Length: 118
Ligand SMILES: [Zn+2]
Image (cartoon, rainbow, N blue to C red; front, top):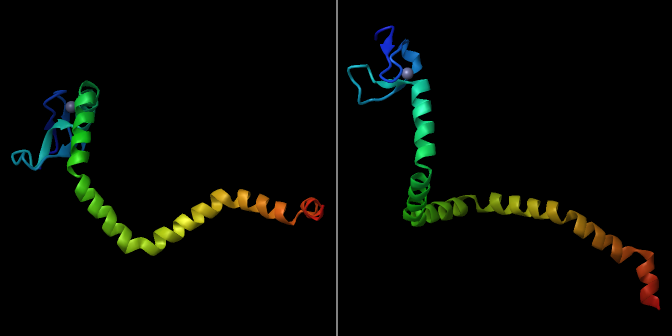
C-alpha cells in the first residue's frame, strides 16, 4: 500500500484513510478513486439533483418488497409476540392513565353519590 493516493476529483494526494473502499479497484488496493470528502460532495449533489428520481425509486422498491417486508414483519411478530403485546399494554396504560384515574376519581367522588341518592 502506498502512503499517498491521488483523488481523481480534487487532484490532491491524500493518505489511504481519506479514501473509501471500492473492491473493484484492485490496482489501488481496493480504494476508491474519489477521496471521502469528494464522495460526500458528489452524493450530496446527486441527492439534490435526483430528489424526485430517488423518491420514485424508493417507492418502487417499497412496493416491490411489500410482500417480503410483510412476511418479515409477520415472522418478527410471531417470534416476539409476547414482548410486543406487553410493550403495547404498557404504552396503552401510559396514554390512558390520566383518563382512567379521572374516571376512578369520578366514580368514588362523594358528589356523585349524592347525585345518585337523589
Ligand atoms: Zn478529492
